Image (cartoon, rainbow, N blue to C red; front, side, top):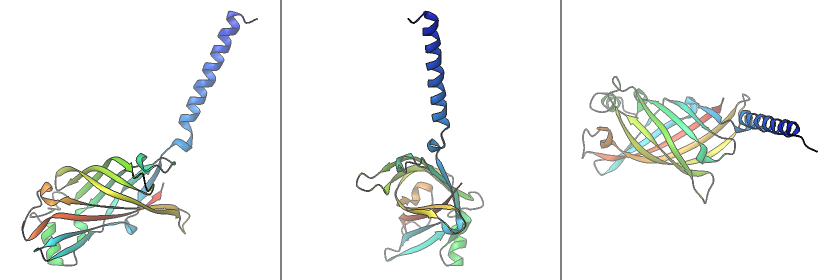
Length: 203
């Protein structure tokens, strides 16, 4: 026959076991997000923009850093990212044009040396688990706007240096006028197409 003392003992024991189980679950490494540091040597941003309504001028930003993370389930909806780009690293294969782009008429890299993108949400496409869409806040030339990019998971695996790597490509477009980068409007298009190539190393 169970006595009140026995009932109390059983209740306390179950409570302690439940609490211990929850604590263990919360501390389990399987639930911790995997974090990757962006490898600048294997990451870049490529862009193109209309020139005179005739063709497109292309360029790239070569200095990119940041992190991305998600839980080990590989559910893209759990991913988060923060990317930093040094605006000084713009390269259009023309020194005179690059100097103009770095100046006060465009990026004004002395005043705004870094552009940043911080994700706010990600959604996975139902038809393809390796693709999705990332929404985030882009800060460029002192202005911040919400932008949306299509994202594709491109691969993962061990590298020759015993590290673990993962890659993504994001594509989309922004309007330069949103960031008051509208110098030479008309001669140069407003829509800028972007491709972001990211390779990260697991921490």
